[in-house]
Length: 288
Ligand SMILES: C=C(O[C@@H]1C=C(C(=O)O)C=C[C@H]1O)C(=O)O
Image (cartoon, protein in one colour):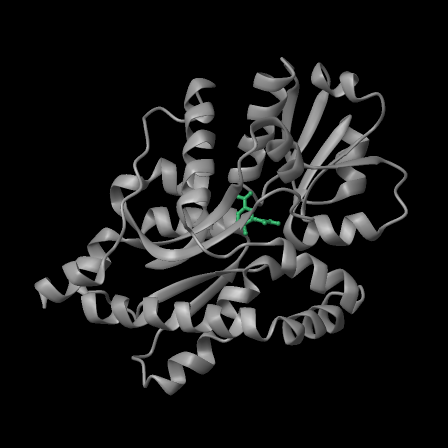
């Protein structure tokens, strides 16, 4: 398989991936890496681009991985997860809570994991049957059209700073309270065909992402300063935000994610059972 363009990497356009991606260019330059190119976009756009083969590797919604898992392999040790409140997956609603269970809920067009997580929680835990509208992430427009609105990422963060007067629930906290599990919102996946055709490049990308993540965690204070300057808010807010996220993908994260996939299948949101299939460097080396 020959690509007619450089290998293209998707990068989520939200601060939640900075601990993985912020130092990636620096690390790639140090490694004398081949010329990768990048596409920066909201998760739903990256999900689609990776599914269609317009990009080759990306952090994508874990739900999108589930939908396309036969074409994808996961890069080990990388995710966007939280064991409880996330701070940026927020449900804004007009009281009382019960009204939205049979009312209208506006869901951001930028998400795949969180919109389905909310459906799982509202329908299986609370036996709700709301009507869902898909809308651009604009709190005011969403609340004019619905009883509640789900926003993710920087859109949720910025909206939470507005004087809006709505009640707000953190969907990661709802999931944790209900199930006791952590939740994985994004995973890093590579197209299987690209992994097979370009094993060395994928190995190098994986090593670079892990090193970038190590620096992102070590220099979390630097990320907080950058976020405060570029997005707003203060250092305390951002230190707490980055501290609440997990970017590993260990047993606890996988267990929580498998439970989510199970509920999503139960609700008919996924049509098949999903296994986690990893890209592995040993396979890549055998293929060399
Ligand atoms: C933690 C977050 O996770 C994001 C949520 C996603 C989704 O709902 O599909 C996808 C990617 C993640 O980066 C967030 O947006 O705040």
